[in-house]
Image (cartoon, rainbow, N blue to C red; front, side):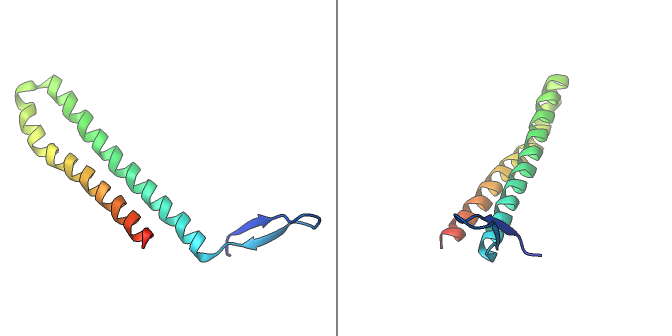
Length: 93
C-alpha cells in the first residue's frame, strides 16, 4: 500500500494524495544515514569509554589496548564521514 499525505484544499473535503516514489526513497535514505550514524557513533563511544576505563584500571597495559582500538576508532570515524559525504555527493548529481 503506497504512503499517502493528507491534501486539504479550500472549500472541499480532505483528499489523500499518494506520495511520489522519489519522496518515499528520500525518506528511506535519511533513515539509513541516521541509523548508520547512530551505529558507528555508539561503537566508537563504547570503545573510547572502554579504553579510558582500562587506562585507569591498568595504566601500564593501556598502551597495548590503545594500539589496537585506536585505528578502529579512527577508521570508524573516517568511514562514516566518507559514507555520508558520498551520499551527499550522489544526491547532488
